[in-house]
Each structure stands twice: as structure tokens, then as C-alpha cells.
Length: 151
Image 1 (cartoon, rainbow, N blue to C red):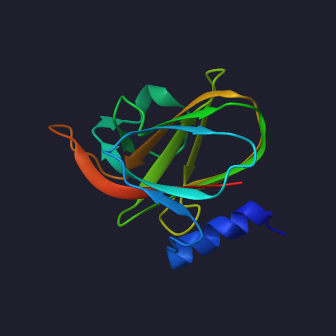
Image 2: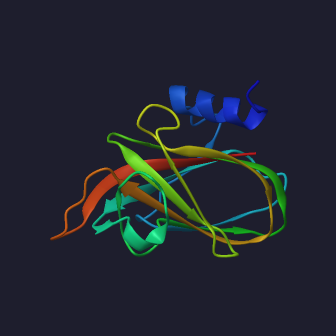
């Protein structure tokens, strides 16, 4: 059985419903804070690909990312659950740097879109890097993406 927040994210992904989630337009990168009891929300960000995955993590798949996070997410208090889905018109990857320095990665959670169902998250600052399947070493590949957070 899928967690309730996963079903909510799937519904937002399929319908793109602004009624079910708050949409906030951002300039490519975002700094967000979430408190316990937050409402589901979506934000426009850029998926960026220039630097190979390399030293970021030991994920088995490749990918291209910028050196700076697409989203800096601050949890003001511990959260029991947090669902994250990235949707874009191309194959994207998601890297999450936890406050303690460990990395989590995902690819193809729903189709070509990455996502995660996280549990028991401590308060702190999380860096989310949204990358692309293919990069451009001579410049940055920018693709508009939507990131959705659901409790």
C-alpha cells in the first residue's frame, strides 16, 4: 500500500492541479522553509545539467547537475513524512544532500521523473539538485521543471 502523501503527489503529477497545490513561480532556484502541518505545494525551478555526477554520490546512474542547488529546503522542525516529485519535459535526476552530509538520489520514480518518499527527517537544511540525463559541458542545459512537496 502506498503512503497517503505519495498518492497525493501522484494526483498532483497526473492532474497538474493548481487547486490542490500552491504554485509559486521562482527564478530558477528556490529557498524554501517547511513547517510541520504544511500544505502540499509546487514550485517552478530549473533542472540544470553541466557537471557530471562524479563526486556528488555513489549513485549507479549518471546525470548532469550544476554545482549549486536548485532548491535549498529548510525544515524548521522534524517531519514524519515528506514526498517530493520533480516533473519536466525531459528525463531528470534528483540528488538530495541531507544536513549531516549524506546524499540520496533518485531517477524514474514516475516515468522519467524522479521523486522520493522520505520519512523521519530531522530539522535542518537540505540541498536539492535537479539534473538532466544529458548535459552540455560547454554551457548549462536549462529545462523548466516543477517540484512538488506533499506531507
